[in-house]
Length: 72
Image (cartoon, one colour):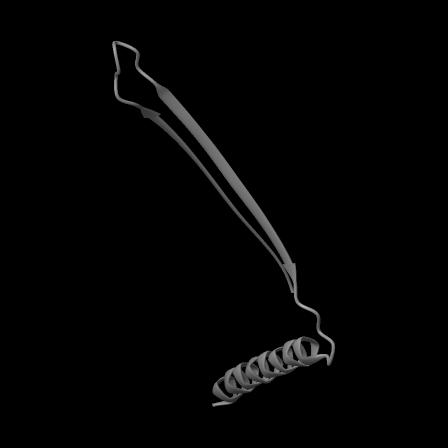
């Protein structure tokens, strides 16, 4: 599974005045991280297939319950 995360920030500050001269500092930073999880043994693939099969079963149960109620 690929993931992409990012962060950005900016800061501006007024410094102390020395001899009537003030200082202003500005700082900007940013990061971007990308990652990819290798599925060497197919664990993610099989997990997704199991979740889809479970969903199919729940949908069939829902349909069966609806048919059962309609026949009563």
